[in-house]
Image (cartoon, rainbow, N blue to C red; front, side, top):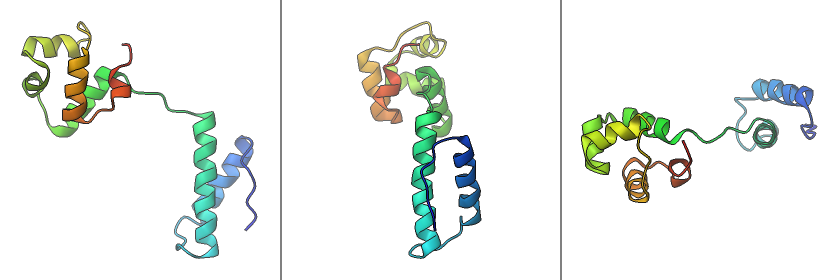
Length: 118
């Protein structure tokens, strides 16, 4: 097991190939340890070189509503009137701090996502 830092795209591809080869390794074995270390190195390289940005707040609300099987009328119980929900989802009305708090506690969307500009 010779593990080296991932410094460039070539190293990254080599690490991915090796990870694929040992993907089913059992914990506690040499290959299992190598798998764990490679996973950490790959994750670090990806986070530094291809960070994933925060989702749009309204798209996050729509996605979460879909996951939970909610309709606009259900969201009206959280943020107020149906017309307000329609304005929010069409980005004609901004979320207030109170709405953000309710959406966070009800839909479990992180406040960091909801407070972004859109």
